[in-house]
Length: 121
Image 1 (cartoon, one colour):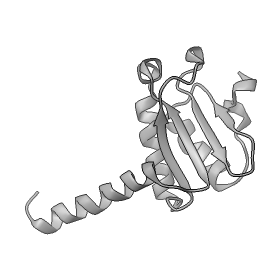
Image 2 (cartoon, helix red, strand yellow; image 1 turned 120 degrees about the vertical axis):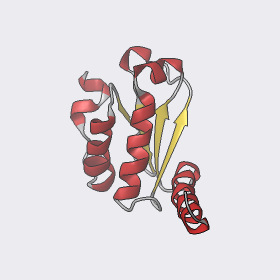
Image 3 (cartoon, helix red, strand yellow; image 1 turned 120 degrees about the horizontal axis):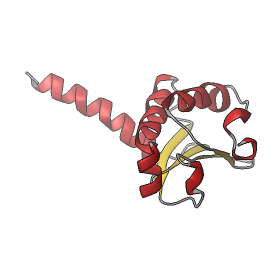
Image 4 (cartoon, helix red, strand yellow; image 1 turned 180 degrees about the vertical axis):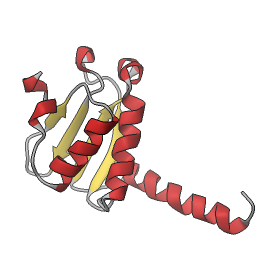
């Protein structure tokens, strides 16, 4: 970092990510981040959701957050998507690439990625 302007740019970039994780959009992405989830790779999944939502320009609509144990450890990393007026969708055995696909097809496109839904595993 060489200048105050660089620091301000970093701050602005990070504030957008923090706001996304604390926002109040009508779509909520919840990543299980208990010990079992973290051990199974939930941290990169959470990061991939944050980055993909931001890159798609969906920060106003989508909140990405984390929770503790969801209760289905054998399927970690687990991601639940809550949308106003719709039934919750639970994605299992997620990774960063799957997260990007879910953002593109489900959150942005409105089509559930059935390949990753718990009932199909």
